Image (cartoon, rainbow, N blue to C red; front, side, top):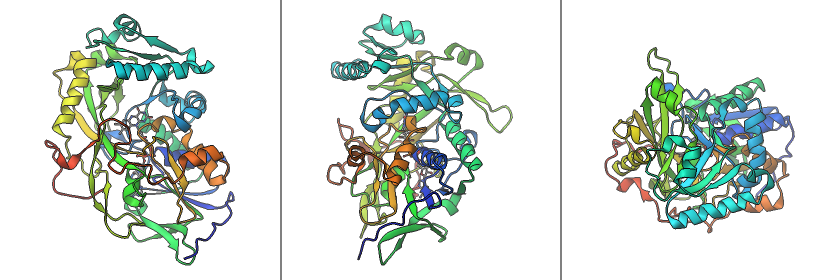
Length: 460
Ligand SMILES: Cc1cc2nc3c(=O)[nH]c(=O)nc-3n(C[C@H](O)[C@H](O)[C@H](O)COP(=O)(O)OP(=O)(O)OC[C@H]3O[C@@H](n4cnc5c(N)ncnc54)[C@H](O)[C@@H]3O)c2cc1C
């Protein structure tokens, strides 16, 4: 079978973004619009607005959350585009109302983790722009000077980096803001079952990807198809083990108005041995009397996989792939008992005042890791016209304003040779067991107790 070339890309080319309401997908659509492309269609199971209160949106998609850490990075492409990213969070009208620059403490207490943080601090400090916002906090007293709310916290041995110019982004609101902007540009959007990817539409003579077939059987023709389906990607297209999807657990604590006032504007506190938490956010609910103040917490650990036999497009027979099980499709799922214990520990260490308070909500949120934590942004080697924009590696929400510019550079052939090499299709370098992040291998959800998940094996 011949592998045919794609049609030339012009501003009138039809471009489909699958996962177009997620972080990388919506960002790609925004940058395409801003560069003058006129025929863009988003396909997604869940759409904008990502209304948190109704539990309707893609809960468990990386983008669907009340807050995410926003700060500079010094790793790979995300590090190189950090300045552009932060500039857009602060100044771009689509993003600036959703960024809260409250500062961030990134800490640890074990010597090897402190040494890693110190290395990262020194790398960032060698950058003239980043260095003035950073300080090394070497003891409890210095930490409390920036994070007084931790006065009763369990901070034994803590040291770390204080970043004045970091904070959090109101994730769902920022993505919705992108959605509103895309509507102004006239982007077509197909959400729900009708937007659910089934397989790419392939021209048999040339193996060119000429569109997408959705679950309802409809054919959507296009000159370029971008798969920005996050943790769902390896279950949809055979990625030859390059991405391993994993979940982490999110929990919500409800605060009274008085408590919320006391914790208002606290910095983001991240400890890689424990987890992280944010200042309280006021969440409006569509039902009267159900508005509430919520503190969001996450645990930090190697993540959980969920391996099962499935046949993604391109696989000749069923293969073992870690596939997400989303909270939106399975709202009664609970979380593993050991995960709940880790989250209780986050509260005990960082917010001891609330150590007896029950969570009002907990669920699993999914990402997909590459072995080197760099994106998988490339054209599929066997299907010209089919582009992959995935491999978020758990650190890509911060790039909501900028990731799409990189995907569009790739589509336009403008990405540097060095970036193309880093983002390339690179099977064999991955670890199909999913250790990707270093450290111990993740456990598999199938082996864990204490989480209720019925017997419904649906992947989505
Ligand atoms: C607990 C947790 C905390 C995190 N905290 C941070 C943080 O503080 N800062 C940070 O920068 N990053 C953070 N991340 C990582 C970040 O959320 C992800 O890296 C990022 O959102 C991934 O973006 P994405 O576009 O690849 O995927 P997503 O945003 O998940 O988007 C994928 C989209 O694909 C859609 N989709 C799936 N299947 C189909 C289908 N069959 N057909 C059509 N559409 C489909 C989904 O509905 C979704 O909209 C965190 C992740 C987790 C799990």
